[in-house]
Image 1 (spheres, rainbow, N blue to C red):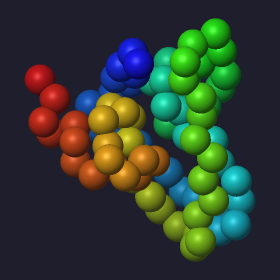
Image 2: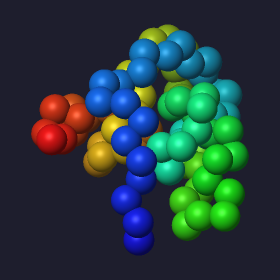
Image 3: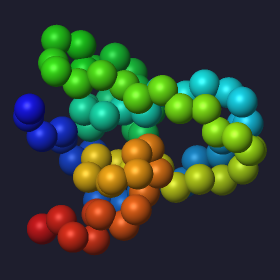
Image 4: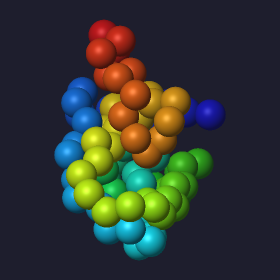
Length: 80
């Protein structure tokens, strides 16, 4: 499997709505980071659907190295 593109080396702060479906970009090519815009088409990547349980701010991964996708786990600090 190819590695995803690193979209940014810091997480994106977003406001999420409870019980709403979101599609997290896993390829790193979306122009709408951290959400999918279909840029993965033709690749081995697919967006990751997630539905938050509560509304509010969240920090979503943009380096695509997190172990807790779509949420940032600080993995961007280890890139280099």
